[in-house]
Amino acid sequence: QVQLVESGGGLVQPGGSLRLSCAASGIPFRTRAMGWYRQAPGKQRDMVAISTSGRSTNYADSVKGRFTISRDNAKNTVYLQMNSLKPEDTAVYYCKAERDLYGAVYWGQGTQVTVSS
Image 1 (tube, rainbow, N blue to C red):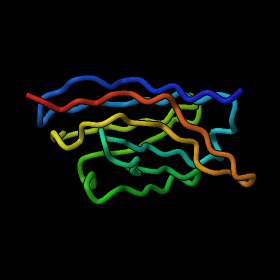
Image 2 (spheres, rainbow, N blue to C red):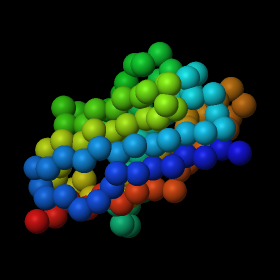
Image 3 (cartoon, one colour):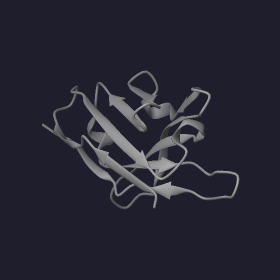
């Protein structure tokens, strides 16, 4: 059974920082690309950052220079360090195990991030 469990969300003031974690089980984490996505109320779910199994990364333009995705293969965990947070970063953040050779993708349950003074 595949499980992706996010943690680390919360309320933070503009300019603040948060670190999200996603602990994975039931997948070959070391060889799986992992991503963070977010969905604000009334909007579509958008990619925030992706980390491939080869450790290359890709970021949405809106978060470049502020967010950093990383992974610890020994802990089967992917992280999203978010700095210089803005109110427009407010959303539910989801962890995703990207598509494998069989087309399977998996999502976590999401964690709320609210940036407000």
